[in-house]
Image 1: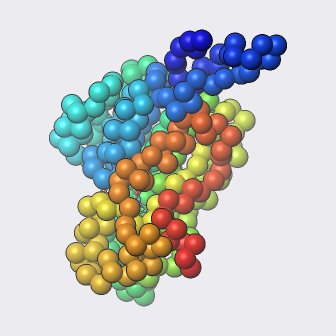
Image 2 (image 1 turned 90 degrees about the vertical axis):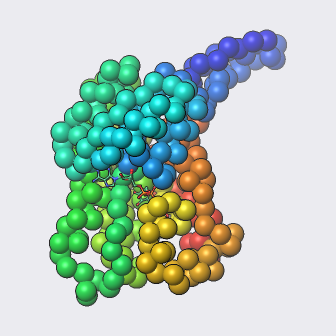
Length: 276
Ligand code: NAD
């Protein structure tokens, strides 16, 4: 019996006589689907783009550095487009939607771009730093969710939005107040989008990684050497995570395998929060 293979298609199995077994063929395939990934020039975002391409999907890569995006695009096996710009600029979101259309129609958005550049208590944090962090992490995600949500609703084929949250949004990690607040807000945005867009078949979830070895986190650790030891000591797995370990759960939420999951925050933290 050969059921063939295409993204999420439903076929009838002839396996058991007298029984109609609906079989989803390869629910993890993203063949024929295009996803926008913001902050795709490096770290978790670049790895998400690679995994989407590996599952057969097209990718619209968004970040500030056009050069890094072009390098990544050249490495991907499938269709891709690069859009250089700031995520909090609505023109960038509009350009990404247009690029998604050109690649054959949009299926999803991964709101991954984020910054965490400061390390001091809230009492010593100037409002300009709040403004900078919230502008990228929250307004950037809102700008893209607004554009993609409208676009997907109009197209009427359903779709997915995955927002990058963090365990920082669920705890009171010291010295990164604006970042913590931005990620808690991302989870609230996710739940709101899930309720508003559920009726048009657009599912919205957050992924909240623990500590993942990227340039963002290496930069923080270089500035605060005791931080690495503290973070590893609190992890039941005794290590920080890899970009692949953060990327796969994000990509999972884009697939048909996740078709009844919406409004959730999926912790990908190696058990860090469970350890208290
Ligand atoms: P990173 O610093 O390695 O990469 C961030 C990406 O976002 C880069 O491509 C950068 O160019 C892009 N970016 C930043 N500001 C931008 C802007 N204004 N416009 C367009 N692009 C912009 O970071 P990462 O560690 O890969 O983190 C990715 C996401 O995962 C972030 O939202 C981060 O908060 C979240 N996260 C990371 C960790 C971790 O431990 N690394 C943990 C929890 C959550």
